[in-house]
Length: 320
Length: 219
Image 1: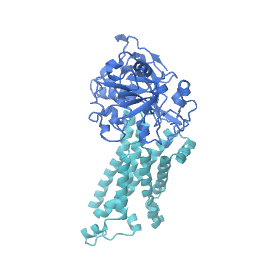
Image 2 (image 1 turned 60 degrees about the horizontal axis):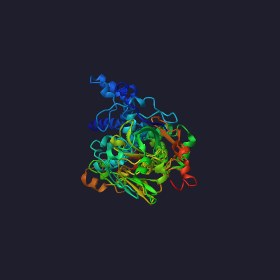
Image 3 (image 1 turned 45 degrees about the horizontal axis):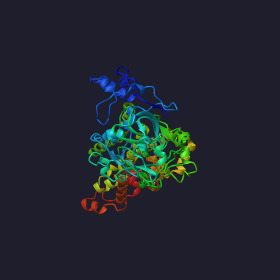
Image 4 (image 1 turned 135 degrees about the vertical axis):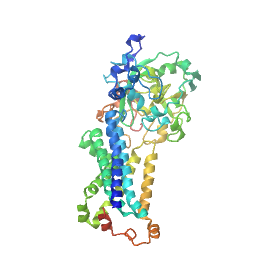
């Protein structure tokens, strides 16, 4: 994994996005230029589909790769292709429908078997932590994947701060419920609020992070603003978004997709090419932007050397 | 003749409508409208279009019976062939981009993934239907043609099941399409003949329900 503390970036080093503008946006901009519309850095910057002010992606991401040398997916792909059913079930719905979602002010509630429970304003919640770039593969259970430069801090740092007791065996997370701002929640497509959980050792693992940003910029609403979980060796649905509650519990939480269909989705959801989804194979994936589904899925999404020990002796077919 | 012109106009509309999803997809490939996973979008749109066109094809005969306007039957073949075309594109995209031209993987998936089994079966059923859609084959097969082409019901049903079995949680569209198919099947089992006879007492060809072979040759 690549961990970097972002250096202080002089403005001379911040390059307009056109340096690595992707083909789609280039064609669009060229077409706009041909149509006589204003085309300049503002047209080709990291346009946020949720309607927020365009921002420039920091220069350090130009050459950044994963620890296996994999290229990053473009900012546009990462922020416009999302499974976030709270905003609708199409991949383009979250970017399209999250415009009115307000990620600030935001309160996170810490509860359960902890020495220091409480409601935290997001700024106070984040204050003690230094954000880092973490380039992780994200493998969706649907068999597509991306390489994404998250921006966040280890969940373990938070856990140590709040002092869980010996009764805390699992960590449970909950997403906000705001049907007024999240149109998908007006229908019972899933059991709202979205719930996820981790076993304590998974939560404490150095790879597990709470992310507040992507590409060094604040998380767009479509990616789970203002705070989400990233657990790179598990299927993407474990990466719960827009977290309002973190509770330390004794019993294994019933995560939403397991409630939806326990035949198909379990609690652990470790990426595993040998355990197929009941309805489709998990042996291969489409590593976007490749058109072909030829990428061989790796055990634990390529993080086996760091996490396999957590599951020694466990029947991973039984514990999906 | 006014009828000929009307049919021609309808055929033009049909062709434009049936080609527009494909045109949108092709344009999307070049303009970048298809999003971060264009193969997924291509697969989904061609699949949806196949299903919708199958349903429209199945609605031609009920429309003919309800309106009493026989010539509408001439739209059925182009509709069916468009459905088959989109099904072929849908299957080809899957074979090329998901199976990466690997026959073994393809056969494994067909054998082991129920939603692919039914989808592939639906496609197989459509092949002989497309091949025998010509006047020559209608003549050659006679009564057997109609029996063979009942397969479109099976294909449509398998297509809806294919769709229902592949969605993760949002079953709204497959259920809606299934309901439409159910209505169309009901209209074939309980055709609205009584209404037709009551409305048109004059001795025109549309009242006497023609024999199956003649009805079919009426294309």
